[in-house]
Image (cartoon, rainbow, N blue to C red; front, side):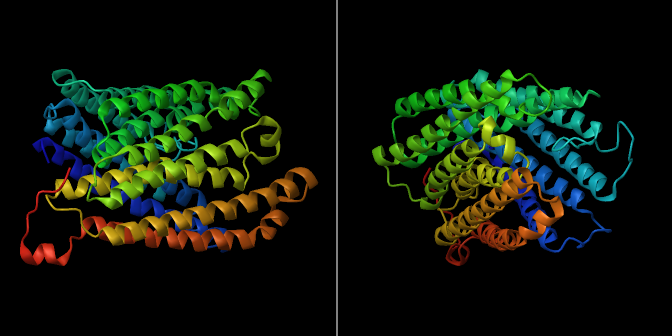
Length: 455
């Protein structure tokens, strides 16, 4: 650890991993409800469990991004974080807001209250007071990291990371706009949901992946930065108007069907570029870095993001196909693999690389860590195929033949059992990962070694 304020990242990573465990637990419970629908139906209805699953996903990913920024920016700017106290205050606000959200969702507190009660917008169900807290935390973060960069060295990695994080915060302001007209509501709702995950989050992903490749492979910075600019340009070019693939059937003009089809088809390009970038950097690399697990997660992130966000996104993005498939299990298949590949695996790669450095140890439990990668990734890929087949059957029976919804769901039961089984594998992989990252090897404890890790 070159800079003392990098240790701020450790607390963020620990909070993120705790929320990660909550997220996959809620996902497994939701998967069980698909095969046993009356489970907890009165104590905790499915819609509450799903809210906890999706919202904890977003919050832990953001917490991981913030922690990654606090780790990366001191090294890139060659400068200590401007104010560690502000960084910890930001985390405190996020934790308090998350606690408030969980209690509000679970016990349905303050129902109907415009300030304290939850809103009825998917992924943006947070009460207004929590949204305000998120904005305050984001402003604290942006001030802190921007001042750090301004006082230090400027690099492409830190600049693009800052651009992504600034855009993330600004786009969240659309979460406060909730018009009564449903079509208008959805049009602006996608400004947050789509432009986050298929726009500015890709900038964050590209910059963090570039940092990891720089450290793990030893490739010249100039080479990494050239790739980074190409990836960012294609991500913004395709992602902004790619929002149109959400506008097909919400009451917007017909020309969005063509705009959405054309530009969202191009969204596969930045993910292909990221996958190519990762493998070419390893191929060109001259460094035999000891942290093999971090390299595996980095390469896995690039590959699974390409297939999940790129290929599976393309499968149902053309409006002629999407007419039959939107809102089916094909959407769920794409969403699960895309989020896991592009952002979950990215954070886990960053944790795997940074934790030994933050704890002042050599990379440890790498075999267990790599086993968790294959268990989690294998489970997620199997889940994706299960949901893809389920969605194909559902599209035909429900949208083409016109069978009743519940009759179709009965037919899909076998796929839901397969999805639940793969969910068990993912959760076991998460537990294995947490053990590998958090629990040091016995020989390190017994010898009292305080090795300086390779960076």
